Amino acid sequence: MAKRTDTPADKAPKKAKKTNGFRQFLQVFQMTRKADPNAVWLMVLVFLGVTGLSLLIGFLLDNWVTGLLVGIPLGLLGAVFILSRRAERAAFSQIEGQPGAAGAALSTLRRGWIVEEQPVAVNPRTQDVVFRAIGRPGVILVTEGPSSRVRALADGERKRLSRILPNVPVHVVETGRDEGQTPLQGVARKLQKLKPELTKTEVSAVAKRMASLAPRLPVPKGVDPMRVRPDRRAMRGR
Figure 1 (cartoon, rainbow, N blue to C red):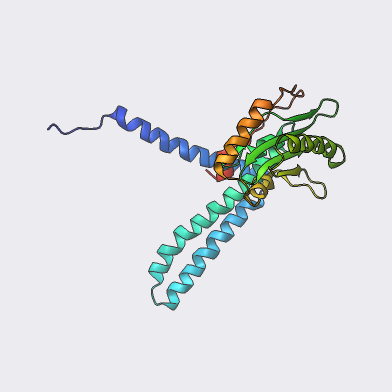
Figure 2: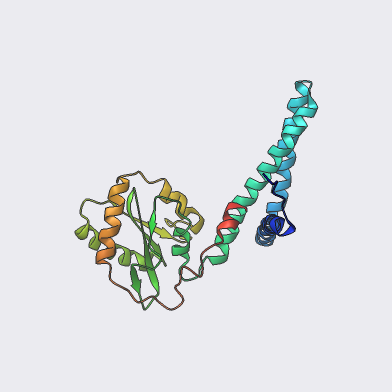
């Protein structure tokens, strides 16, 4: 059997993929440094702290070489973790205050959630909106707008859902910086912490029920969660 040899054309995609990965990492780093200059110093401190601790343990065990070899990768891992967290914060800071930002925050939810990209309740005059996600905790309404205004909009949608789905829990999460509201970067984590109430089969059934009854609402000008969606790679630090 003839031995297959790689041609330059075969190797090109792999090289391009590695180059793109490094470029993406560099873009994330630059974006984070611009939005949060302290992130760089924190990364350096974490790297030096983890590496130094590992080296100290190596000295105590009379094997500093192993301590250094273990400490450097762990230090780099710690620095990348800090970068990913700071990058997430920077990515959300760029879309905060824009129409559709709450929907963009919902788009970062992982598997197991059904997220509707368009708002389910809209106040055309104030452009306050309510987005919806369905998961094992039930139906979650995520608001966008001042609490004093958007609360009535969310309550109306919750009452409507209670009539349609009387046995399904409905939660309301208000996004924003006011008292009692949840910042954008904390929306996904807050939803993940909610207690599961439905099975996966029930989640699918609820989503189909909602899809069959959902009216098509006019979307306010500027509200487009697809356009303000945060960079997922930036949020993962990649």
